[in-house]
Amino acid sequence: MSPGATQLGEIGSSPIVAAVIFGVLASVAAVFVLLTVPKRIGPLHVLGSVAVVGLLGLGLWAAFSANPPAATTTTAVPANGVQFPPVGPSGPNPSGQPVPPSAPSPSGSPCRPSGSTRVSVTAPVGASVKGFAQACLAVAAGKDFSVTFKNDDTGIQHTWALFKDPSATDRLGGAQSASASITGPAQTTYQLKALPQGTYFFHCDLHPTVMKGAFVVAG
Image (spheres, one colour):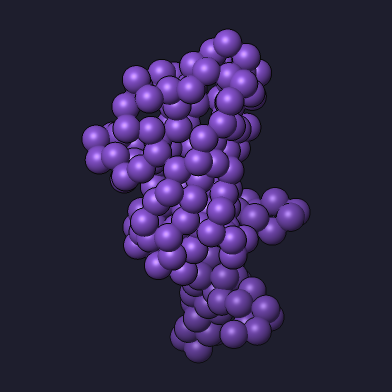
């Protein structure tokens, strides 16, 4: 509907306008009737009739004015076009369903084998506080390998032992126990059989909470 038609519709539905139109039509009708009756009715009678009809129209207007139609409620919209408060769901998830957390991206191995079947690990000076110089060792799967353990921590005993996992219950090679430690400076080499692909664990039996690391067997 066009704006002009909307305005005319609002005017036509106004009680005041309706009352005025009714009064005018009634007055015209009364004058027409009075003019068609016998001439014995004089101008005074016509004016009296018009006054009565006018008072009737005025009464109708007063009645409608006392009970105006309910005002239409509108919601103000700010200049930026955003309605406040917002209507309906908002935000990045309008469905209202919980958004599952993003799956963490898989991390790669901490280190990769160089292709050699010989690796070495060092206990530096202060290793009982600093840990091994290498936190990760790696060899290729399916090949026997050797690990050379160097203890550079003068006068301090350390070991190097390989386990299946951090529980350190399944010993796979290296020192057989804490009693097989070496006192620095010294070194020893361990021969180990090929292992399946996976990530294993190594530590020093005498300082297991500090001197530890990952042992990667990669394809």
